[in-house]
Length: 193
Image (cartoon, rainbow, N blue to C red):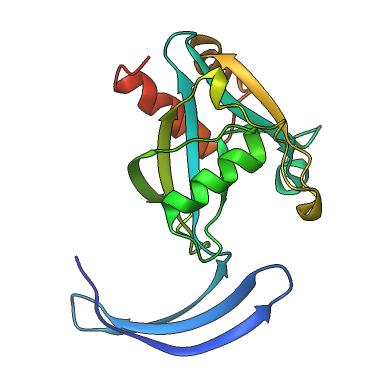
């Protein structure tokens, strides 16, 4: 049931404050030959990368906790969210981005990260493709306290959690971040830990 002849008719910028919110009017031809026109809003914040650091010997993973205003206004009483380390590409390759973000947020300096897949996280309204990585870490890879960059006003807490506890935190609702759940389940499904 593929559509064809997709044409962007009009693009309006609704907001260009933090990232870009556009109203896009488009038309396409349905399989029965009827041409249909629709308008939708799309939020463009750029593409990103996310990583789960894991330690096989200690059976632990590195996660972060930080305040997320969208969760706060949608029922998360504290606004704090437990997440895997992530960031926007900002003109970098996904591999370079995730190495930079890992060091800034967690304090661990990794050389290699294995890309496992990429996914659209909210394709109904957000343009972002997220590149997913995993990497093994050891204590001697810790080069700083992490916590994010002061100039980006980041206030990130680093958590080292047993993998079984992290998986249980999904069931208990303590971990609700989609990208983090996907990475933890990947580690489990692939029997990495």
